[in-house]
Length: 434
Ligand code: S3P
Image 1: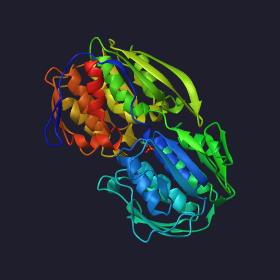
Image 2: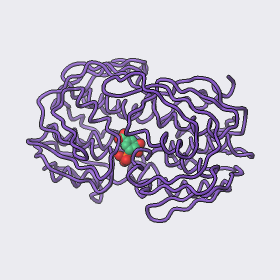
Image 3: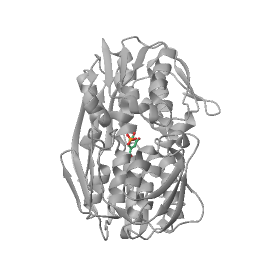
Image 4: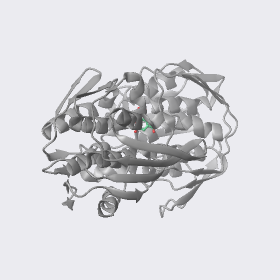
């Protein structure tokens, strides 16, 4: 590894060996901050991840009048002093969601039912992401909210009374589902979200732990208007989506054997692990504990010879943030690797589908995207240079590719990695030297 200003070069080095932990789960940390904000009384969050996205969400929560002890020093334990389901205060200035789609979309659901006028804005990448997917159903619930061209941030929300709806989002999105469940807590009647395919269910698990009137019936999740939530403590597990980058590196670098300890093993996030196994990857995981409804345990991976697989559309939501890695592994796998149902990757921090194809072909690979399907053919990569395009998962993709390509990979804009995986290069150095 060598670093220039924001450009970091990753080169093949020895195997990845040893045992390490990865930073806490970004989705769970953000939900804990937001749900904690509307609990009655304090919620202690242990081992949150202080990455860019959760910091932005914590900043918004503070601006809404919620004290977060320990935030200023980014401590290992913070306490969110919840103000009750309807107790958030309009700050009189725009809230800044930064780069975080989760922060913006989930908070919009909560604010739609508060008293007051709120504006949520974000960085230039977030301003380009589709918000119509929450604007349409929130308006159906009676929310008064405006978005630029009815689609883009900033969002202006005039909070008020909400009514329950039954809604089937056109895309499987945990952010849309969670936005509506949070709004549903503030609505009259029973709000039902019918998922087209199962997406991550951290919101459901945390709300259930907090005593929300919530029921999961197959693909339907129902929530009734509530009076109060209460949750004392959440211990955040390691982020499986961050661990996945190290897993991919260990699979590709000969002689590697790595244990990632205390990582979240929620079944709705296991798609990457299952696809890797189908590709011939040696990967084992064991749930050792469940805390706040979230299973966690150790993941062990060995360098492996891989072959292609097909990920059907119904499985894609369970590895939505790891499609980059399945594509990278596909370059080194025998035969063809296909991921179906990938169109929504165009709506991530950047057009991630176009970027995957562009990056892998630029490094010497064979990848193409047509409509809803990504195809990658076996073609070991040479290496080269790429830009993160401001997208944390592309920055980290470049790092893993560099370890596996003879010529290494230079990643410009590598700083974006800190949006989800602060300290990535230190974690890597730890396992490269042990
Ligand atoms: C997330 C949901 C997913 C995922 C994102 C985090 C969440 O987004 O890609 O990184 O925390 O709910 P979508 O809901 O847009 O699929």
